[in-house]
Length: 312
Image 1: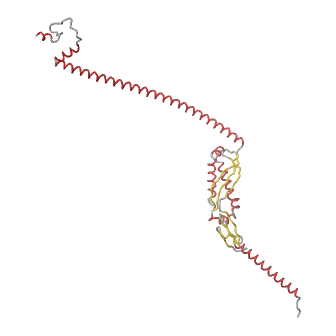
Image 2 (image 1 turned 135 degrees about the vertical axis):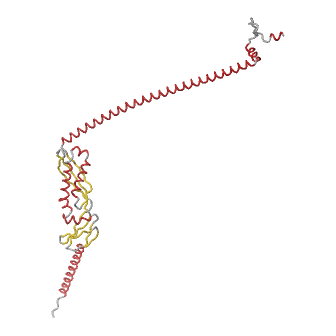
Image 3 (image 1 turned 180 degrees about the vertical axis):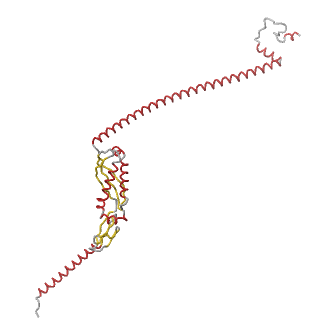
């Protein structure tokens, strides 16, 4: 029996171990590749479309999932709000050429994402084949309904018209339209200059109207001031006249009452004089100045009081 040299035996052992290591590494690598082909994740705001041998079979929601390696393929579909922008050439109602940039915000309905993918093959195909052409058409139709001046002054109405047209056209598709925008509106330079001139004239007219209104206001203020002064003077005069009238009435009443009182006093005094001869003599004595009369007025006149009685 032939015995292999010791060095040759060791070399064979090393080769066997090397092959085993290569096989192990290859196995680990295959397992890693197999694992990576089996596990996958879908991010939030997206859904996954499973394709098996190229055929869409199901829709999966965000999270960690397992698929058949080398058989299933996953297509990720975004279901968050997207924005499509289209630049276009159009005409206004008076056939004036305009350029514009119109955009639309839209979202794929989560529960219909699978149908959209199966019908159109993905978002980019849906945009290029369906959404963008209809967006251009809706914008052109809306712009053609308004004059250039109306588009400038009331852009929101044009945008609402675009949204109405587009919603009507897209109601059968599995998407939700959020809002449209009309930007970078381009008009002929001559028209822009005429608009600026017209606006300048409007501003001047508005300024002149404001000036006239201010003059009228100031004139009215002066009239109001004059009326107020007149009313104040009238009120003052009325107050003085009323005071004079009141004072005159009071004075007249006082005179009347005084006259009544004096008349009553005279009446009482006359009654007293008629009833008392002594009082009459007393009054005469009060009125006598102490001089004797130089003439005697008849036998019945008693000039010297009580003279007859004294002689008797």
